[in-house]
Image (tube, rainbow, N blue to C red; front, side, top):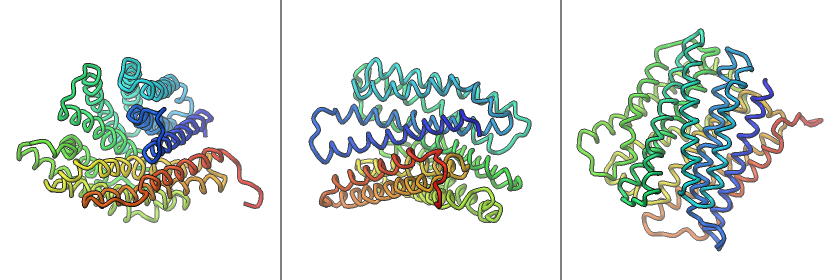
Length: 408
């Protein structure tokens, strides 16, 4: 395994630990007084760094490693500048959003990050085209790059409104949800499906099912944006498209699960026993997410969901932590790189426990909040869940690349 690949994985995992640390500060400020911290500024810094410094960074690294399977480890030299720029802009956004919120410097770093994303998309698209064998995983990767680029429309719109002090709530929320949707339902989701497909292609025969699944999700992605905008007054035919997109995604996931079960014996040869439970948790989180999306097409449920902040926060964490981050961590474990120490896995499971506790508390907070019932010490409990995640992230970072200890 190339040193550059291991190095970039280590940087990405460190960034995840840093995100967990910021999460602790945010939760502490909600539970207790911390006047020196601007909550909104730190929240913007936290979210932008999570998207760019953790998820986008590690997805780029893993996608480049996919190319290395065909071209050799030297491919990382070709992408070194792009990875460094993405890392630089991620830390720039972290510092500047914390310092000034939406302002000249934070918007400048955000813009540079988007330009770098375009550059990465173009270069990676060309390198995919140069590969000798065409596979379904490459379709997922190309779609991920397209949606990565499309999401920037929301970011640019939001930056323009904030810089010009335009505070139309409908426009603001529309831009926010546009960016979020094409990031986590587009770029993030299609990239991890590409990574999953790239591993399955090693042993499983090519069939029509994965292609059908890809097209169901790809065609549904754009109209599915309105799943995040059902609070807007939309025409009936748009609502029909939204309903069909939610059904298409559920059908596609069902077909994919059926396909995986058919070849479960082969899959056991690809994914280690250590990785399997983590990937199963990510799959369960994705199933819950798709069912929640389908349920949100009911007008009454939609108004409740998007009108109550704890539910929105819980849903976003379900996707970004439960689906995307758990899959990435499970995928890294399945590659058997840098995870030889048993303490790495212990730290990882502490982190997973923190995610599950966080989601449970957010779910309870959302459900009880609808009835105006307050859970005693809920903010302190959520702070505890954030501390558990930070502890787990610190442990698996400390033991990444550590060799097995004697008698372990």
